[in-house]
Length: 126
Image 1 (tube, rainbow, N blue to C red):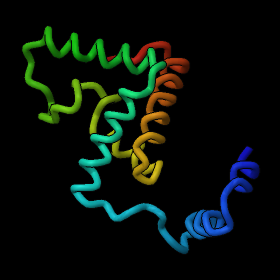
Image 2 (image 1 turned 90 degrees about the vertical axis):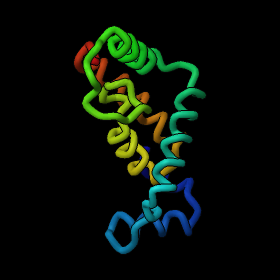
Image 3 (image 1 turned 120 degrees about the vertical axis):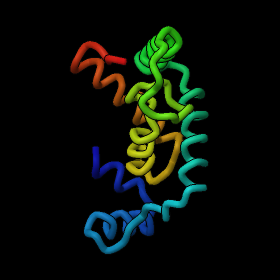
Image 4 (image 1 turned 180 degrees about the vertical axis):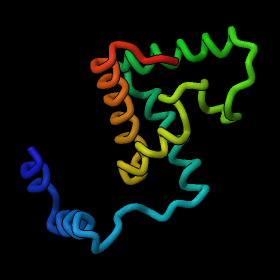
């Protein structure tokens, strides 16, 4: 699987990947506040564009319901989250960094992560 994916890359892309693996270069773009905010917004849109994500949707809906029925003050004031780890800015940034700030790929990875966690543990606590 991995060798097939590598063989589909161009010679230049393959060289950059090998240099990244061996620590010669870093493919990740420089992180600026603008890059972070733009990437988070684009990832939110990419998540909305994914049609089939039942586990992720269920967790987000449960978190929104819990937040609406709770009178407690949220632990952080990041309005892009509903108070759940799966929608936290910190987790989204991890997935964005993993995918070199490509929001569509990061969104897909996050959805697969939610499904994997559900398969392993049977529930995703809000």
